[in-house]
Length: 237
Image (cartoon, rainbow, N blue to C red; front, side, top):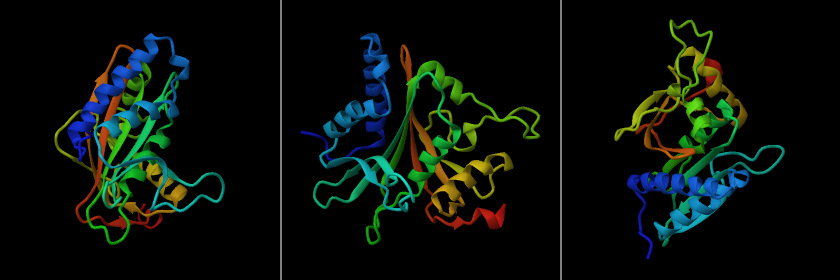
């Protein structure tokens, strides 16, 4: 019988399970099959084994307007409560093989989670998690990526402006409105692409970092500020 409630510890276990599963697939010679869609099986199996509610992959994002062209803007996974089918969890995933993901795609996933809300009238917030998995060398290289031509004495780490890179038990506040100038374009591109105002800040922590033989899996928890306020980037920057 699956557990009735997922916790942060559950997502730590998910990182371990996913790392083992991916290493196994590679040792079996199935590396060419690995992709973001291929992760549906292990992630779906784990979540359903530990949660008694409903799992829905590729669910339309309730806060994002449909793009003029193409598919609706969706979340990789949402989990709904068993009795009332209320939104309880949102999960976004990113797979990286031999090439690194684009920086903007990572920021878009994080910010899509930050703006995720239950429908009006459902006061309890939903939990949100971002999963990054891929070949160990590629993931590690992405984590260590820096920004040039910033005016800083040393090139700053790119990801540090959006996500912490060390496992922690506490959520870290990430400034958006008062972020460093060299991070602004990434936030602004998200705002323009999704026609949304940006949060003044948000909170996040690295829940798990699981390096394996050939892969590495990281999971972040994404949270909003207690009193979430937003701003229009074009009038502030």
